[in-house]
Length: 142
Image (cartoon, rainbow, N blue to C red; front, side):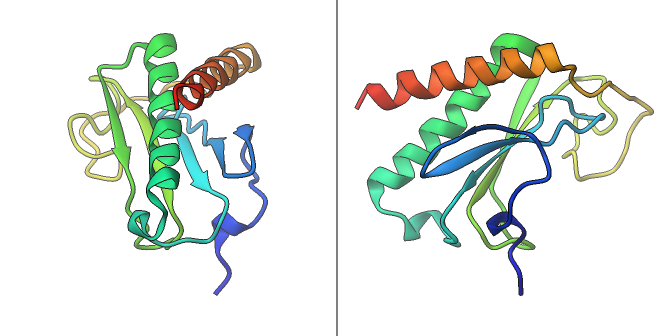
């Protein structure tokens, strides 16, 4: 079976280093929805060394912080399931009370018609810069 996360991403990559990448899914229903993907094909967080686990979570939290600063969502959902794609990755999903699924999971039952717009290029650059700054700060705090 081919792993989709081991392949090059067809979505914009906001940041990538030798450990992970931050991919912008830019879903029209969930603008700024990002996924933090480990580059190595590893299935479970506990298969990582403690320092790698910490690095992954610092990256996830940096993405969350950047999204909160720019978009001020009502809630951020963090999810790491891996049932369909057994490769460590974290979903960072800004949620708004008027989105089509709120308060349900964004994978759940639709409760209202709602549509946002995908992010424009200026906002993508701003989000990328904020994520990079927060990751650099988090990783330098070691």
